[in-house]
Length: 200
Image 1 (cartoon, rainbow, N blue to C red):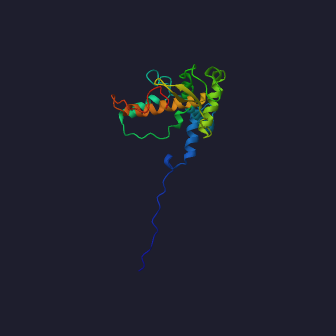
Image 2: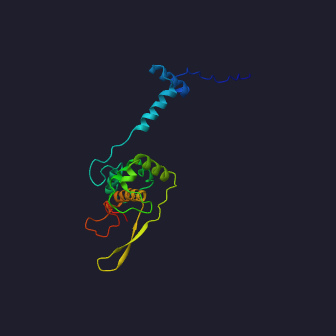
Image 3: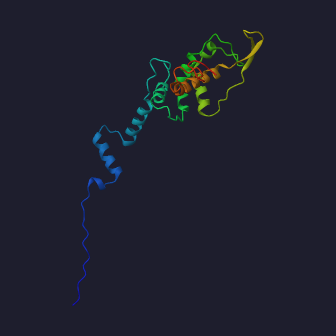
């Protein structure tokens, strides 16, 4: 007597939404939105809107007018062991512009012989070009002009005077470093390498 072998029947499941291709579900969702906008158009518009979002500049305190530096300082206050990396995005047009505003226009000029007033005639174009050079890795500080000034105790000492764009970058970098390291020093410490408004 031979035993008949039957193949186990495979259960046929009706298709549901979880098994449908992702692109098909997305197409159905977009059709439900109406207005005749294709998925590509709607997705692209969302990307543009997110790109245009811009944080607010700091309203007061030592970082007034700068973008993002107050948040750096807040993190440094909460955790002194925080290691900050990839800070180059803070060297942007808005912060460079604010650094320019903080410069003293009465100071001596460097080897470029460009004053703050002259640079400001085409300010936004100049700042944009400077930011592009920094982002592209092509910016380099230029040599400083050396002058001799008298010392109170007698004699002379050399003083290096940088170009205007170098002063802008130095001012912003000093602000960024101050946001990181100022909270990490003791209040009564006098040996602080970075102080607000001081370019080393």
